[in-house]
Length: 154
Image 1: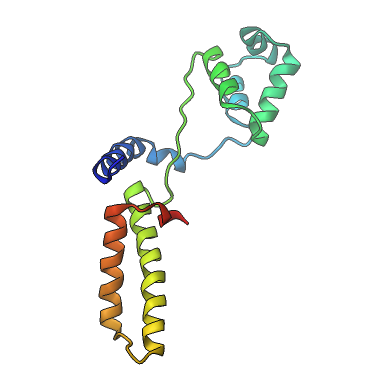
Image 2: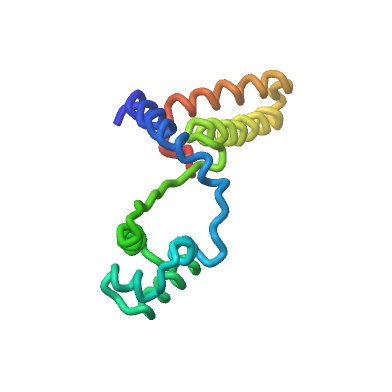
């Protein structure tokens, strides 16, 4: 995949992620979504179990596994369908967009590279002044951001 395709993919994913951004502010119900929804609907363990083709104890086990994080996405899809709902799943960057993640990492890596080089040059009495270092970091970060080298995430 060339760099234009990579940037297009990033832009497309950022557009999709933007729709999910508000979801990260939604608090997880203390007992889990399955329990919260089942009880809000006034549905018993047996009733949900019947819809899933399992026992009430099996339904309770699903609720426990969801709460402790060991449930599978496939099982959650099945429960959602049994509740006449749809599972919505996504990953949202802490920095809001993939583009911002890349910018941040490119800047971090550029800083590491330039400061290491600058230190070596300083030892050889060829050091750069602070403004030159800052400019070099910005240029290198821009290059990393545009080229998206594989070592960006090392």
